[in-house]
Image 1 (spheres, rainbow, N blue to C red):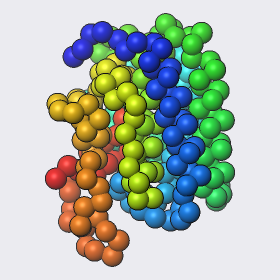
Image 2: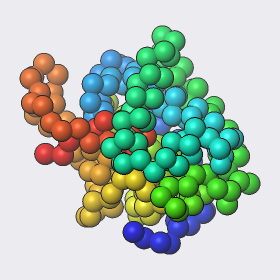
Image 3: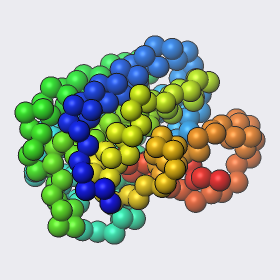
Image 4: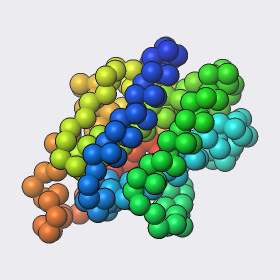
Length: 233
């Protein structure tokens, strides 16, 4: 594992880049019922997930080092257990969201993501959580937020027939090591490694991903926030 934490200024820039990209892609979206690379999620579901995750990240930051997330990781449970618990939380929160248009969900995402960005610089070195004896700071978790936003920006872009690549993919590799310590990162091109490690195929949609075609069962992999992703072919 790379022991050099990502540069603070690069993390802050990448965080803002991810939030900006999500907002810009939402403005281009016409049909919020289109499928996304996130298995079984339409674009409207992805917008809801973004709202929930941004709200959760803000809560975790405000409650650090005694947040729900810190308590979960302090159990030192197996990676599969952490993934399942986070995935269940994501599904439960999405299920109880009020019915609202996609743009409204993205506005709510932007409010929470902006509040997080305002708070994190002054809390940068505070302990965020402890996982298997290693302390991870607020700055480390900010890297995880960068990964989350850029991955979902790519999801949104692919859903509307566009493509997306972050300006600083090498930063996301370093941020993954420190912000997502419970998930391994595959080798290769920086951005494609992040996509594959989160369960995404850089070539999505492939022929069997098109609407109306039967989909073979594949083993699910996971995104940093615990959402099952499509398995790599």
